[in-house]
Length: 87
Image (cartoon, rainbow, N blue to C red; front, top):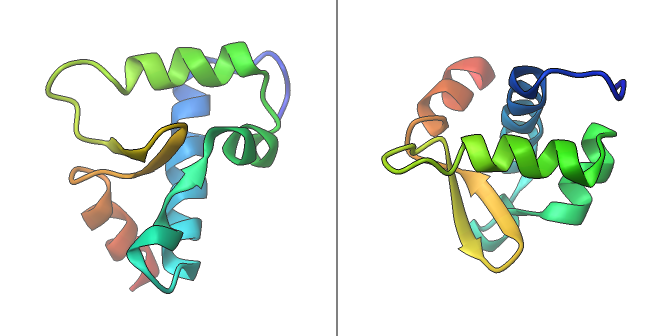
């Protein structure tokens, strides 16, 4: 991805990467991605990733969840969307 991405593009990229990762995961522990791994997979800067994660962390936002320190996974709002795409 290019360095001039808008935060919405990074958020959409996060969804797609987490969806692919969840579909490939065999256990619940495999469904999350480390932040460094996610940043590299998206090809974005740390600042771009942090900005997108900040937007996704507003109170009441359930698109992502943090199952462990420095790890993210699909949240309740994105999981059904991912399932629809894989079907």
